Amino acid sequence: MSNDIPKGLVFSNTSPKRRKRSLLLAFVLLLVQCSLIWPVYPLFSSPTPQIFGFPLSFAWVIGMLICSFTALFVFFKADTEEEK
Image (cartoon, rainbow, N blue to C red; front, side, top):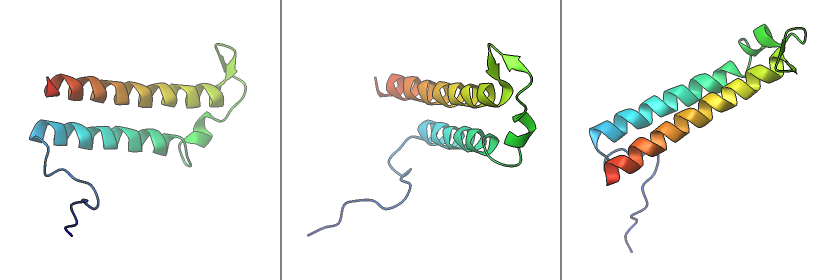
């Protein structure tokens, strides 16, 4: 019985362009995650400035959610266009 299930991150079967996009996506998502924890998030934890009626802290979380969604969407579109 062979064990064909790869362990860890698998980049060997992908093209160099996809590997580069995957690493860029991982970096962008890591930056988004780091911006939502200490020491960056307390800089935006003030409730006084309102953005579209939301406190700055909540608007910051929504902005980071939009950034991560956009990064994933761009990666998905580029990945599906490469497969065609």
